[in-house]
Length: 270
Image (cartoon, rainbow, N blue to C red):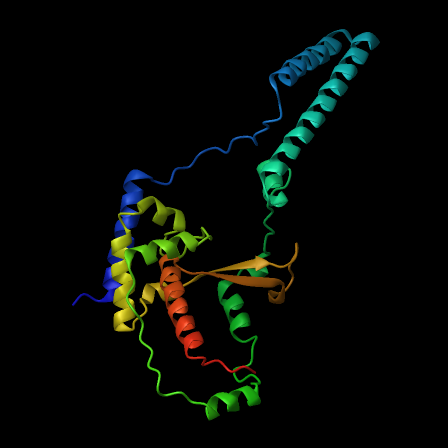
């Protein structure tokens, strides 16, 4: 019988091989930010403005300097009006105003850098693994409530899922972050629906055997700064990026466990 780790490794390697062959990573020069509010009329006015400036540079007269300033002000005013109208149009199309502003390049995401003394992965790991006590305080009343109401008559077993369920869970994943395995949800979507039966086979194998693949247990840790200039490890927030297919299995397991707990009322009301 093939081990589930070998199955997951085979699936991952073949997906990556397909993308390397048909959609390889390429390096390209970033283009200038788009300005859709710049109309043809404004471009013609910009050319007239530039010609006026060249004329002034060659003759150095007050008349051409004033003409250049007038053209510059006209162009600036028209650009502001067109940009305002474009942003208003985008705001009307988007329910989330922040998304609309980012699409208009009015608001951009900024990434704060981490200083060299805080960039050591081993030191970051040591700090966050020792930040919490091993034996924290527990709710004694809640603990005693569960100990006094041990349920033994209900037996839980994970159930295998269908292709439709796998597709439903994949469509629920919103994050496009790439884990250590090199896959993200967009790559999975590009391979659907052909890859659905393969994912179902791996998930059902995990559910029936009671095993979680080793490669899906490993996460990529990204330390994000909480403020612009972090000066200690306490100013960092570590984000764990798990393999995307592990999220599919986790969601299915979570749904089945929640359904079982709610059905038999196993949670304490306190």
